[in-house]
Image (cartoon, rainbow over all chains, first blue to last red; front, side):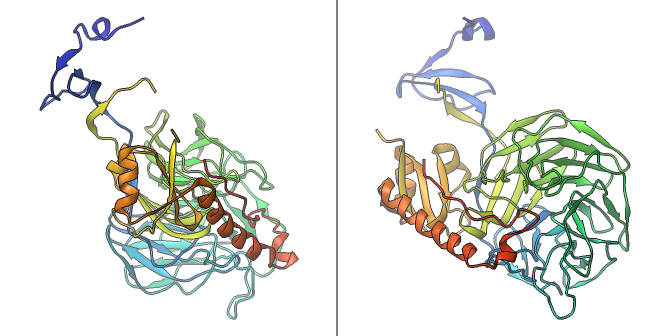
Length: 342
Length: 99
C-alpha cells in the first residue's frame, strides 16, 4: 500500500496545532484534536440566495451573472398557469420590474440583466390577444422594458437556449403551430437570433427538448434533455460550433430541465428530473464532467447564470411545486480539512 | 446514532445556509420547509440558530406528505384534457420519502 511518505517523500508532520500557512496538498497530524488534517481543495458549494418574489417553474435558460440576473415569465404557482412577472437580481435583492407582455410558461430566458431575451413557451388556455398553444413570440428586454422581437417561424416550447440578445442560440425544443393544439414534434432543428430575426442553425443529430445549453451562439455545450416522445431522459452532451454538433463525454446522470450556465469549456450544470428531481450538480472543464457540491433542494428548470466560479440558480420546480428559492454556487476553495476514510 | 436531524425552518434567503454550512454538514430541503440536517454538532447548531423546530422523522415525513398530497390534489382537480398532456410534462407530483 502506498503511504504518504512513499508519495511525498516526507513523513506526516506531528503538530500540536494546525500550521498557520499550509501549502496546497500538505497533510499533518493534529495531536490536540487527534485528527489527520490536510490543506486541500474542497468541492464547490451552493449557499442560499435571496428568494425571488414570485414562485415560478417551467422556465429555462441562463441570464447574466450571480450578481446581475433576471427571470421573466414562466409557470405560475398554479398547475397550469403562466406568469408575465419579471424581476431582476443584484446578488442580494430581487426587484420587481416591468412585466412581459405575454404570460407563457415553458419559456426560455437568455442574455444579460440589461439585454435579455424571452422566447417560446406554451399557453394551455386561450388568451385574448393570442389564442396560442405554442408561442412564436420573442421579447427583448433592454433593462427597462420588454418589446417585441422577431418571431419564430413556428411555435416552440420547452426549448434550451443561451447566448446574448444579439447572438442567441435556441437548441432543443418541441415545435407546433401557432394557432391551435397539435401533436408535439421533436425536431433536430435549431435557431439562431441575430438581434432581429431567427434563422436555422446546424441541425442536431437527433431531436430532443428540455436540454441545458451553456456558452455562446458559436461555442455552446448542450446537456441532457428528453428524446422524441418525451419518455427517454438523455445524458448525451454535445458541442456546437456555430454550424455543427460534436459528441462529448456523457453527462453523469440522465435527465431533463437541468440548469446550466458558463461557457462551452467551463460550465456548471445542476438539478434536473428523470422524472424525480435531483440536487445533483457537476462542472465541465472542456474535457470531463466532475461532481461538485449539490444544491440543497432538488429542482428542475429555473434560470441559471454566471460561471463555474460564481453561478446562480433561480426559481424552478421543486417537489413541492413552483419555487422562489435561489441558490448561489461558489467554486471550490483551498481550506484545512479533517481527513477521514469515509 | 441517527444519521440525520429533522426539523422545520423558514428559508429567509441569503445566508439561510452558507457555503461553510454546506461544507460542515449534510443539508437537504424538502416540501413544507422541512430540512434534513447531518446529525453532528454543527448541523444541530445550524437548525437551532435558524429558529428551527426539531421534529421526529415521522413528524417531518407527515409534513412533507401533507404538502405533496395537496399538490397531488391540485393536479387531480385538473381536467382530463390537461392531465392527458401529450408532452408528458404535466405529471402528477410524486411522493417524497425522507432519508
